[in-house]
Image 1 (cartoon, one colour):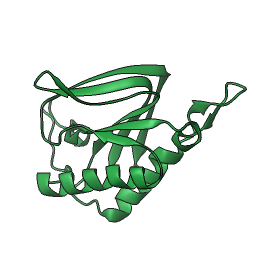
Image 2 (cartoon, rainbow, N blue to C red):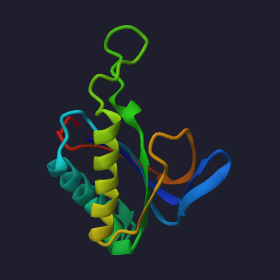
Image 3 (cartoon, rainbow, N blue to C red):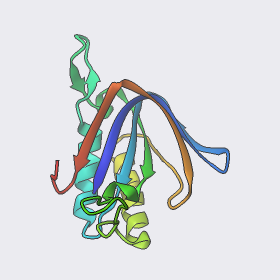
Image 4 (spheres, one colour):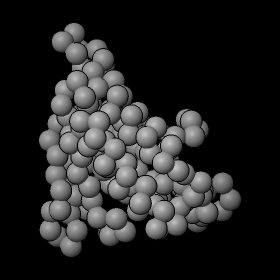
Length: 149
């Protein structure tokens, strides 16, 4: 799995001009499922997202997690994080999971985050979405369950 974690003061997602989910202080996470991913990757990703210490403590140091600040997550599926542009200029998506696996593991990740105590809302899997956010910092972190980065 690959994720782009963005610390936000607020974020929302709309489909066909209608807002389907929004969060306040916390994170907006773009999540891609790879074709080799399993439930092990789900648990790694959920724990990493919930525990990532990127929120300021009383001294202004990035030392607190979503769990510490009782932050929320807006989790958006985005298979294009597996876009490979090593050859040519058109991305290839061979590393991305097929839709059935992608949706199942994406929803499992949302459920795992909720089970860890992080209120998590989702976009609509496979839909064309409009995502809005106010990136706080800005703070943006790349996460890979395969530890690619």
